[in-house]
Length: 180
Image (cartoon, rainbow, N blue to C red; front, side, top):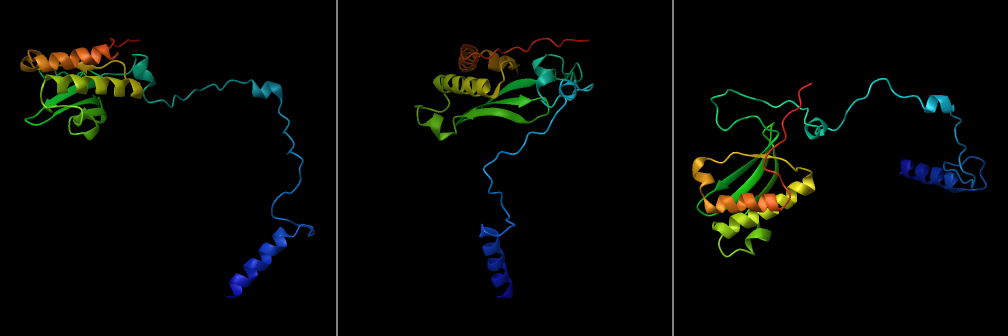
C-alpha cells in the first residue's frame, strides 16, 4: 500500500507543470542538431561487411558443394527443385544447399486442393508448378536445378510441371559458378 501511494505521489509531481522538474520535455523547440564535420561524414569505411547471405549466390560467386562424382543426384546446386508424388498428393519444394526447404507447394493445402478435381493427376501437377513458380519469384529465387529420374522425366505430369515453372518465369538451370 505504501508503494502504491508513493507511486501516485511521484506521478502527480511529474505531471505538475508548475513544478521546476518534469520527467518529460514539454518544450516546443526541436532538439539541436549535433555538429558534424563534413570531411568525417564523407569518409568511406576501409572494410565492408556483407550482411546478405544470398548475395554471393546472386552474383554466382558462392561456393557449390560438388560431392562425389558417383553420387546421384548431384550436390552441385544452390537451389534444387524436388517433386514428390504419392498415391494421394503431389508436393513440390525448393531445397537450399544447406538442406532447408525454402519454398513449397502441395495439393494438401486447402487453397490449392479446393480448385482441383483430383490431387494426383496431370492438372494437379501443372497447378503445383504455377503456384510454386509464383512463390519462388516472390521469395527472389529465379534459378534452380531440377534433376528428374528417368522415370520422372518420361512422365507427362512432370513435363507439365516443368513447363508451368518455366512459363511462370523460373529458369530450371542455374548459372555457372564464376571462379576468381
